[in-house]
Length: 381
Image 1 (tube, one colour):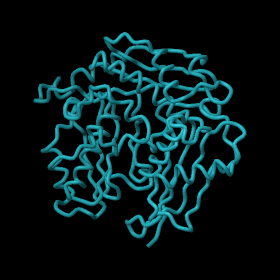
Image 2 (tube, helix red, strand yellow):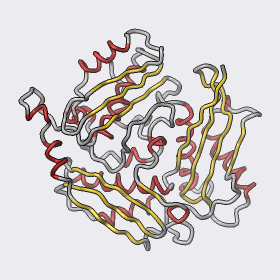
Image 3 (cartoon, helix red, strand yellow):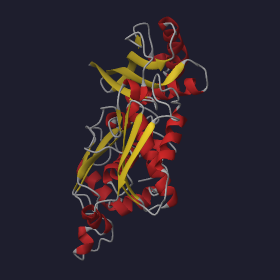
Image 4 (cartoon, rainbow, N blue to C red):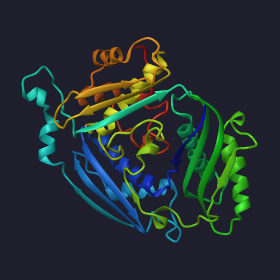
């Protein structure tokens, strides 16, 4: 049976990703000075204005406004007439400390308070987290989101390297893959919407994007005469960034994870320190799912963890290999996970080295599939 599946990605200049990047930049600077910083940083972007709010408890004395302006500059926003200018935009900072009601559950877990043999922080919130991996790509990621991210990253690359010098930072990509059964066989549709300066002919833009972006990224054997290309379908994309649409931290959670190919938990990632299991447990779930596939236990694997605030150990673990398990039954994989890995917040943080300032590396083009990130390493199980 043939079927189509579509995933999207966005560039680093998308207004939501701009906000994610500012929040993760604040987090990284806090962790660089104080690895035990508690950070929950949210950013909002609109016309000529950035608002940074949330809770930070840290020994780090940082200049949040300067961090934000540097992040905006790094992305390439310097024109208030078409998007936002890092030099002139207004920045409001409204930061408080972590609620003591939350801190009391994070500092000492319920298990430790009850005298159980669990010396660990409690989870910073309740919630569910998913991790996923499959063998469709060398990154153990689904092909649609893998290619969509590569296209978005290439858009930023050709802009910054002046390969296509008339592009601006905002942009989106979308890839539709045709499957035969579970095997991807071709690309059905590619959509690219990219911000540009005025007075560029659509046909010039279309030709450049197809030749210098799409065909540089997508393997030729996946493209054919029936592949459809939609480049800036409205015909014009000059106004972009926060001037074209507001931005908000944590609004691109499907882009951040598996492009809808696998489920997502309830929480976003960016701006959160690793005591927030929304982030750290999702990374651990991906790490274990990837290694189950990489070690040959299954062709695809989805893992769910659930946590309760103030409690260190996960409330439940769920594993689904979609009928592809080759060695162990799923209940035995669950037992293997319990036996092999320390899944308290403290255990996850230590195992993956999550108190290091690594989070701006995750902000753009997905939190998964990048070899340099600790939850992407392959181990022997």
